[in-house]
Length: 388
Ligand SMILES: Cc1ncc(COP(=O)(O)O)c(C=O)c1O
Image 1 (cartoon, rainbow, N blue to C red):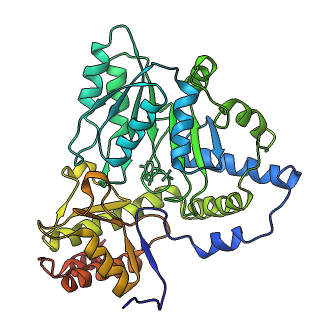
Image 2: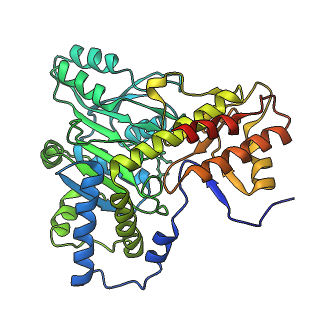
Image 3: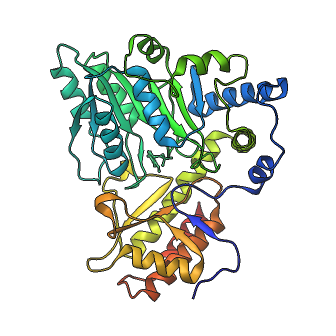
């Protein structure tokens, strides 16, 4: 039996639930992308994105998913054979490494257990040992969406500085932007990679790079082939509010609206809301006597929680039961965590009652699937929400 009544709960860690306000904005008729009206909107959006990345530098918008923005970050700053330091924090870090190798980069991929974030002491040690400065970039995933582990980017920056190394710092902020505090300029990030379908509460289809002056300078001499992803024509056209090719006009309507929503709430409040809801979700998991994938409380992600299944129980069977009975989608386990983990998305357009319903669906689903657990997770979360 499949429950189709009521609203579908899209509790995967992106794409996230798109607010009605954004859906309505996107339903406006498409306009001429070479008109003055469009240019005014595009300039407003770029200014808004700078605020979200917390940068005064350049921001590019590609009609792409996050993977395209990953590629743009690499091909604009690096040359064939360049050494890049990356960390195996999970599925997405692994995918990005694979892309870098396919592009002809030499990746030093520091092995990880998919339960911890980037070890910043390793960043310092590797860079300090690289006397000839052959490592051209350190590329890390801020919030590993496959594990619910958030790496400490400010600490990575401190360690690069401690090693007095000129490598660029490139950061994937795909599932943290607009939900977990992220500071491009303060943290000295050279390229940040973002996209539309997570904290920005939009459908998939927009990819972003926030670019420091140092990265821009590197792009002048970088020789990896690039055309569609080239920052130069994009930034030149953006100055007047235009794009070198057809932009995703209606997604940009949506982005203008979602930025307005984030600024109405205030970014510090947005981050605090995610922190509080994240903590409530983790309390539920602990009360169920289930195990979080993330081992270090300093690295808990506030945008999603990944949960280990008890041995012998399949996470995808649980997800199937929950979508069938309660019309709610949870995130699947990715890569080596397939079947062993389910992920709860608690980011974007999300509030206390949506979390309460999400956790209720999981608690009922655990019971219906005969997974061994201790009832009471929903109660633990509600108790925390009520007193905080
Ligand atoms: C951290 C992270 N990086 C990269 C990607 C890839 O983005 P996309 O699927 O939009 O290409 C994702 C997608 O979920 C992600 O979560």
